[in-house]
Amino acid sequence: MVRYWLMKSEPDVYPFSQLIADGKTHWDGVRNYQARNMMRDDLKLGDFVLFYHSNTKPPHVAGIAKVCREGYPDHTSWDPNSKYFDEKSTPENPRWMMVDIKPVKEMNMVSLADIKANPALEDMPLVQRGQRLSVQPVSQDQYEEICRMGGVQ
Image (cartoon, rainbow, N blue to C red; front, top):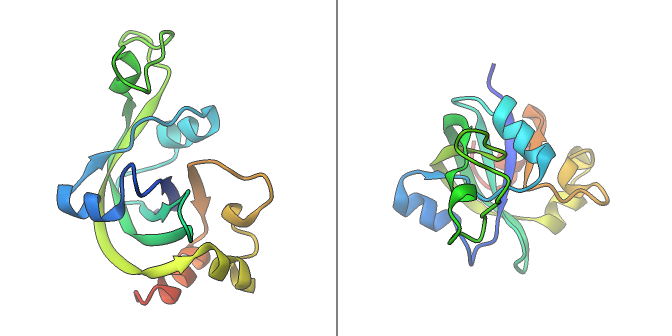
């Protein structure tokens, strides 16, 4: 059964346009245990992802991606030169996980303000107070509504 997710990236770090240019990428650097657990246990091959640009004005959903490789150890945690280095993570006992995603479709910007204004999306984790996870579940109805708002059917 296909599931739906929202994944956040700052556009000055890795924008959706770069994912399109690259064709796929690994989603590294997640250093929150709850988000790690979702990537390790829940994100599956073929799941759809709303690619969300955070820390920009306005924050917004920029496109749709798809999981093309399920959770595996985040090798950036072993690299002392990486900003994601974690001395407690090793290849023998990895602490952090990542998935690979590929682009599916760019969409018209769906801003956070528009998402908050839509009653059909009031239960999305994205709009809940204090919710800051970089990987979040999205219901099928919420996913379809965001796609509709972004001009993707």
